[in-house]
Image 1: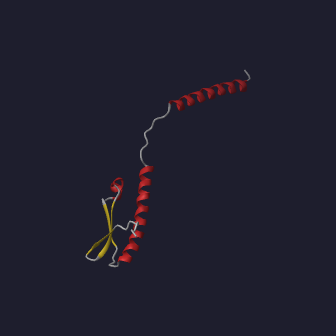
Image 2: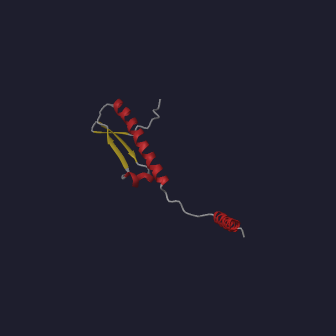
Image 3: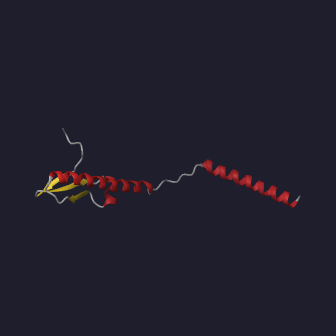
Length: 108
């Protein structure tokens, strides 16, 4: 059976590390191209368990960064002409209403 979970494990001098490339769009926000964390274990089972937790945390951090990038992305301003036309029409209706009010109030 093939393990379908992404563990992102490497081993250096018998010690396991979690290592993963940072998504291209997040490099500038995250500050580096690769994330590497020493898991401080030589045990394969422990390394697998810890890597799943680290993976969950790093995905959560990256999701928040993605949301921040989306939320603060500048949106080009293009006001539809229809809105300006509606404002002009409303303004003329209000000015007509004001004139009518003043005329009725004065009794003329």
